[in-house]
Image (cartoon, rainbow, N blue to C red; front, side):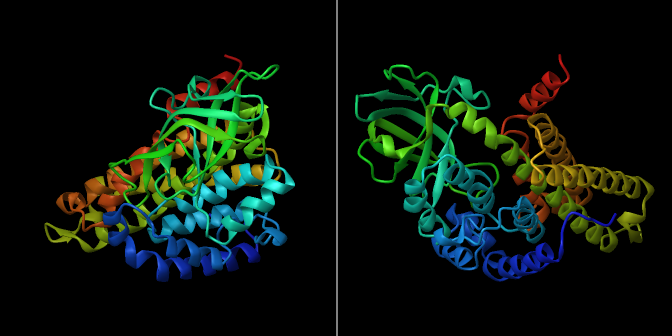
Length: 380
């Protein structure tokens, strides 16, 4: 079906993004996966094209495109071109909203120009060895000392944790009269007591550096706290619907790419004297996948519209996230099967897509947690 959510300005942006990724990212997939990270030079080039933190105001280096449809265009083109790395979704869809919505004018002026220029790689550290989808289980502490906090604890699964110049850390506040709950603390690389752990070796998304981080009485001044101390959980909950919608956008686009690749293969690959796509069992499988992807596309596009209008709620975003990531893995698994033995070979893109797809059902909150959110919205 024809999509109706984008205007000419979004399609012009899409053409520009696609050309950039095909030139600057796609040829380096194998190199970046072996290195376990996307080089800073690429990030600076992307920033120079205004693809990084573009929603920031012009006076802070952005272009003021505060319209999630532009975020969606980048997320889709990353998937459609097979670009390696999660940098765009992490920065544009997850981190920048924190730096814009929960900061003072002084903080924005201090941090955003460095992000929009590509000189600063930001990250956010929520998950811990003992706390993943349940943010209320965070054990890291920020103990008030009268004029500063001492941040202690550990974080894991931190995307861009190895390269990050600034990490937003969620921790439980202790010792501050009248304050209970979580806070968000900005910690720069090199702060005393802040150490990097190992770079984590993952099944998929191998070009995206992911790290463990450790904090041992790291001093954080009040001017490096994002938002109100004690309101950290509420602040994170406000941004989670966009994060989950971003995951859904990528899941549907990646499903579309997997189907397109497999249709080409099924039309070329011969078995018993004819293309394998002409066998009824395979044709039916492809027909089912095509239909389910189309259904997912329509729902996600409607969610994008709702989000742009400020109407997307947590349950709708959770539903989009769990349904599309379940579908994504189903699609790539079926597509790999249709490739036969070649699908299991690393030189075929469907193999990378298959291993990359699995984490979608885990990050951003596991799909079981997403169903819990939807179930509670039903009054159960």
